[in-house]
Length: 140
Image 1 (spheres, rainbow, N blue to C red):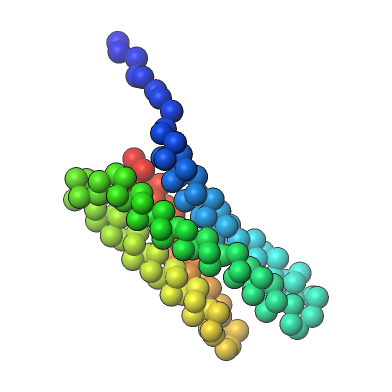
Image 2 (image 1 turned 90 degrees about the vertical axis):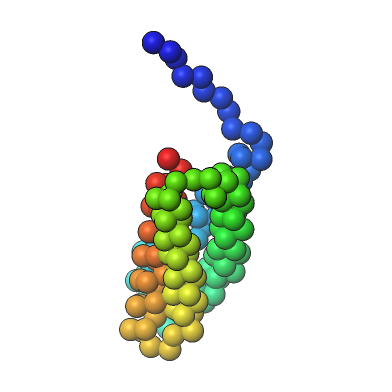
């Protein structure tokens, strides 16, 4: 029986993946935390949810762009053009989810009714969760 040889990731791989995971923690994790805190935040006053959302946006949008940039870096690092067609299809679906997540979340910030805000927030969060799941699947 042959034993598998394990080794540490290179410094660039460690940085690339750490930045990607950290940005996902802020982007998706923050959305979940803010949604969970929203009932409490509403008790602080009518303007409190908007202020919390603006503060979160100052953190989350840079994280979104770090995700996009490190996503391209990840694709280049694994030589996506040499991957199987099913891998490339899943990657394409993931990229669609990333676009839907960004657009849905942006539309949430521009929506003027509670219903529209809820729909766009749900769409953005669901698309982000799907992108995360596909990212795990793509990692093999």
